[in-house]
Structures are given as structure tokens and as C-alpha cells.
Image 1 (cartoon, rainbow, N blue to C red):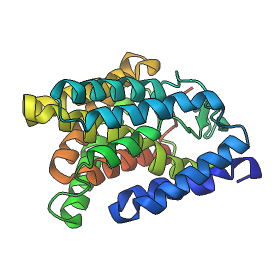
Image 2: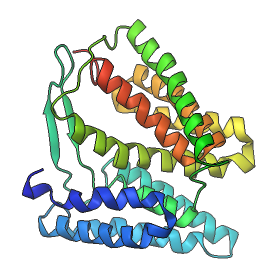
Image 3: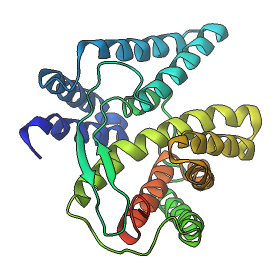
Image 4: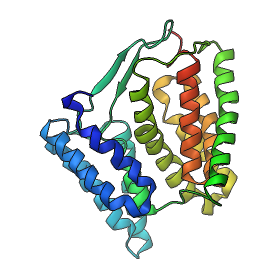
Amino acid sequence: MTASLLPWMLLFPAYALLWWPAARKPGAVLLLAGLGLAAWQQWLLPPALLAFGLLLAGAALQRQGSTAIALAGHVLFIFTALALALHLLPGFRNPLVIDGVLKPGSAPLRMYLNLDKPLAAWWVLCVMTPPLLRHGWRHSLGTGLAAALGAALACLGLAWYAGAIAWAPGWPAQGWLWLVNNALLVTLAEEAFFRAYLQRQLTPRLGAAPACLLAALLFGLAHFAGGPSLMALAALAGLFYGWAYHRGGLAAAVLAHLLLNTAHFTLFSYPALA
């Protein structure tokens, strides 16, 4: 990792510490140090203060006793999280770290180390404190593995059958950077928002199954840039992640998501056939 990417030497462990509630204060120190270093290197610019202000305002409103004010806090967070995920808020210069073809016959991949999108994970885990595990780590581990297997058979099987991907086992040179980014930033941010936040908020109102389905559909919709086929596959995968969250907590959902992505990355053309 070059000197220009040193902030992520602090940010990656900061997000890893999110998994231990007792370690979140040291994690917050690492996060602030990493963001400060990113600002010094001009990956983070002054307009990014708007995003931090919106997240803090959402947290403050959500904790008010008034139902209407708390609802306003939730709405503010949802719009802020979506804007961060779509890179619509100013002040974030996410570095491009992979730009090219990773495997023969695959489409080019452009991968960024995002500063904006993962911030929603901090908000969800620190403000909403969702269950990380259900019924112990063994149960969560088993649930995550089962969901990953089901998602891989269904989603990768359909993608292969449709000709979107082909068998191409291998580990590209950039694989470890991809894996760390996927484990600590991508899957955590997405599962924190869609499962630990949306699905969790919807479950008391709609019931477990409808909440899982709606969160999965919204997860598929979030992949609109990849076209209808990717949206459908993402929604299908979201059903497995939602089941994993319901049965095993956030850790199970993140594990299922990460294992599916890793199976795709390791065994097939990635991100798709050219």
C-alpha cells in the first residue's frame, strides 16, 4: 500500500473494531485519525463536513422522546446513507485502486476505497446497536455458512446458466486488497444498512418474512447500475442475507455476503464476462 493510501491502514482496523462493542471507543479514535490523515492527504475535503453533520443530526433526532422527531431522524439517516452510497455528497475523493481486467475474458473492474459509503455502518452499529450474533457465535457461523451456500448455488448458478459469468478459478494479484475492502467496508456497510437497519425496522411492522422480502427488493434496486439481471440476482441474494440476519444476526448476514462475493471472485469471471 503506497503512502497516499496510509489512511486505510487506520480505517480498516477501525471498521474491524466495530464488531466488538467494548472496542468501539478505540475504533472511533482510529476512525478519526484515519479520516484526519485522509483530510491531510486531500482524500477528504471540507465539504464532507456536511455528511458528518447530517449523520450526527440524524442520531440526535432519533434519540428524542417524540415519535415524530425520532421519525425525522430516521428519514434523515436513510437519505444520508443513500446519498453516501451513491457518492452524491461532496467532499469525498475515493481513490481508485483497481482499474483493469483481473481474469482473462472478464470485464474490467474499477474498485475504489470508499470513504463515504461505510460511514453508515458506524451510524447503524453505534446508534441502533443491532444484534451482532443470535444464539451464540456457533449458531451465527452455521447460519452464515448455510446462507452463503444457498446464495452461491442459486445466484452463481443462475448467472452461470445465463452466460453472465464463466468458470475461471484463480486468485488475482490484487485479491488481498479486494478481500480486505470487501470484508471491512463493502459487505459491512451494505448489510448494516439493508439488514441491521431496514429489515430490523420493518420486522415489527410487517412481520419477519415481508420485512426480509422488502429489504431484499430494495437491495436489488440499489444495484440498478448493473441492469435488470444484476438487480434480480442481488435481490435473490438479499433473501439469503435477510434469512441469515433473522436467524443469526448481523455477523451471519455479513459472512454470507462476503462468502458469496469471494466465491464469485475466486471461481468465476469477475465482475462478469466481457
